[in-house]
Image (cartoon, rainbow, N blue to C red; front, side, top):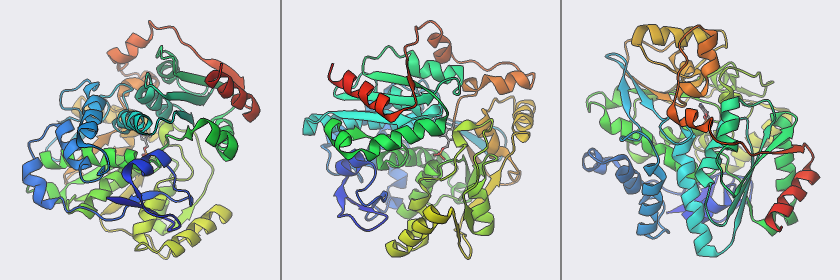
Length: 453
Ligand SMILES: *Cc1c(COP(=O)(O)O)cnc(C)c1O
């Protein structure tokens, strides 16, 4: 299997290359050149365990990896999940089930991709002998999941910038209490945007980038997308076969990576019933599906912070298919959007997609209601999935984070505080962080000094 760039200006590459690069050299995102037809395999795959299914799925995509390496990377990635089913389905009523994606080490769905990505990086380093230095900015969840996926990996050093005082205390503990020697949490004086800008500046410094083998772990990496396709397939296979084609997957969405991963399966002969894109008050995607207008607005911090985004970086992948693979037209749309902050499609309708948006006022109300009706605790991101959800249609709701990661909403609503032993255990560990000012030169010299002491 080979991978092409959405912008058409790069030769196709193999899986390991696409994963190591992240972003394609022409600025586009990688996609599979062709798709396998998985429909004849559905019966044989129905009884597989999560890692077995993941392995069978990736055999179609990671074709340049030795099979035993692939299998090892997958099994060890999911060995640390605390639920025996890895991604259990929990029934709320006759129509609705929740797909719990928060049983990984940092209690959010990003673990599914980042635990595997860490192992794939390790294989890549073994193969090429070149070390990697991972640099990223985070407003919380991504940093914690990336650190957990990469901690202790030989040949990888991890530098994560976050705005001091602006991530939740639990998220900060998840990043700073790991005890790992290859992890450097950098508490930056400034906002998330400042941290992001610093990271971009360092990535733009090509000689620095090459000299230390800088790599990004954000959701543009193809391996992250494919790893997430697997849990949609796993859940779909567990549905009653007569309901499979009528069940909608409801996805709390920010960068569009998660929902895109599910949609990819429809290109592989898997008949999922549809997708509901659930945004918070930052509703750029909801507006797009409603009006065809893709318009940059200001970001308003919300109770579901991991969905507070302005530009959905994975949208370009969907756009590629929406435009029937016309890379020239895609480049025009992206250019116009970059320059003017907006693009108006005549209409942007894709069969099977619907959308919703949820305000900060509604999130605690939904949390309360789901608790009262089903005795089930949802986190503020997952809460957004319940907005205007049709009661008489079957749905699988993706629970993207454990409610214990966001206890404040529960306390404010006068509900019992959700807990998790994984988070409790962090309280006993000493935090380690490095405080820096938001200055690219200072961050650069910090990194150089740690890499070459
Ligand atoms: C990252 C994140 C999201 C958004 O996922 P995208 O792939 O960016 O759409 C939703 N919920 C939680 C808890 C997250 O951490």
